Length: 390
Image 1: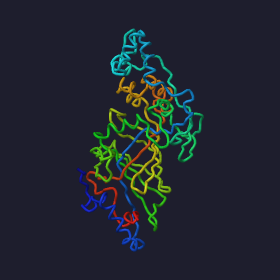
Image 2: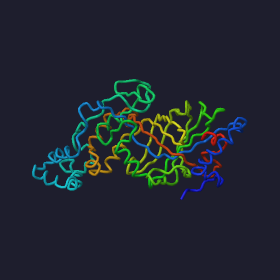
Image 3: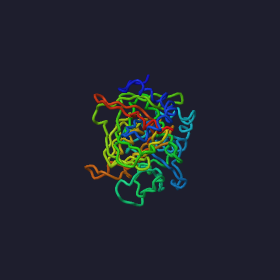
Image 4: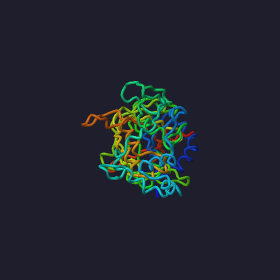
């Protein structure tokens, strides 16, 4: 059932019935709109998708993509000392006989060890990494270097996204044309039925006399909810549900943003949010920027970019162990080495960079958001909002 909000009953029903009502009411309200004193709006959203941004190009893996698991596993088994006959036996009913053997293929002090907890127990396989120069994101360091990208939406140069360089030549991490790459989409989709929802609230939105969103200053808050999203019949998160924000201060992200032509751009800020151990257990971004377009249909879509610790990204692959390697055609130790080499910010005590630049896509559906012990609910309903839906 839909969670109860602090709105009166008529306002809580705005999502499904109210939108139809708005169409009929628009004509009635039009006459009074000019005399109505505009007030700032607050819009609420539930994040429906959050996944690594990819705009893969035909030539960004000039040496080809990394080999699929059916190919590379033969090499791994040979490196373990398996004979051709043993390898053929293990390949019968591929990959079912290989899940267990692949765990103990690392060697440390002469002993076989778990490769996923000991990724350096094998030499660096030097996986193929992306060489292209098209990526969503932001110029985080103020420079435009040879490893940087150009954003296909804004044409901004100097975009920093070394995460895509590290993972962009695995076939399950490639996508183009605004599509979601296979593995990042699976990570998010498999966790959101039990993971508390991520919520976005944009406040301070103003409109001109024609109902168009004005350019100017707004605020954006990103919070964790106390419960998960609910899926609709199509399997997507249901719009217009009510959510309550988590009181944990770690889940409170509030930053100034500037609205231009219906798209907001935040000031740089530090962002923290918990996801789920199946995917990435936590997201911690420094120098974070968000570009988010508020669509006329009530949805929102944009990009989040920043520097995040690279080790939790590796852990998200390692936790799945051989299941991930065999079914996603990835190389877990190779990912460890690549992330470590391509990390480009915030050196640790050893002088090695602990953070890697990255970009993620955000998709969101409209939602009602309540804050505990606060008389504040997003998606304020009034004549200006109704008139918008002519």
